[in-house]
Image 1: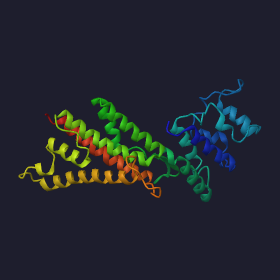
Image 2 (image 1 turned 120 degrees about the vertical axis):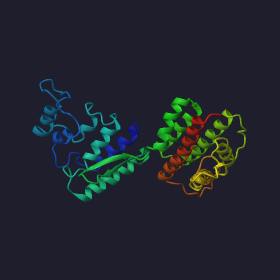
Image 3 (image 1 turned 135 degrees about the vertical axis):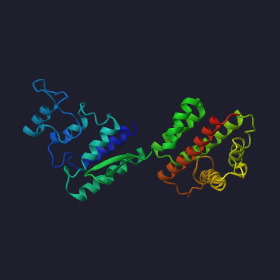
Length: 295
């Protein structure tokens, strides 16, 4: 669960404090029916067959439940439920069937995303369908592939670095992501060099990478002259070097590995995702090549 209790409570507090009607134009039964199977959820009244009958009685027939009852009802468990259920609940609050006032929808949309920013989730307007959905901005595909790769290889330290990047992305710790991304490349290079019996003690990340590309027979100068793809390969490999160099420079200015001026302005989460994606793509490429090429 990426959306913490604290974040959920903040969103719920906003809804209550601003007196936002969570079902909007719908009655509570019709609104909740869009998310839950009310006929399968139990009633709190033994005389009634299901949650549908229960809610109808108290919210529509007698109106004797508080407006915020749904946030504390254990059947829906909005504080502890799966992230997708909580997100679907607040997305439904923005649906045009529920709300028609565009200013109100925009205000709620902005407020929900403000609270969700630290989680990496973002509510977005659907392109070709009415309503809103959500995306997880923290999902870096290459990082996911690295996780799977190192589950098989068994490098515990690298696993911890990948988990740390994931954790820091979820917390919005941009500086730490940049620092760990550089360390991830360094660790991969040193692991490859050590396994191939080469010196891995050069602390300069650029030299480490050049040595690693060399032992993997991937350095630009090792590209066969007769290969038709020589120039494109050279450009790609030099681009990999530039990725590492730029990550190292970012770390010097913003990361966790060096002192920073008090006036330094931090980077945004999107920059951290870019760095994490670039570093993990390079590290995965190196480790895949190392595994495939005998030594």
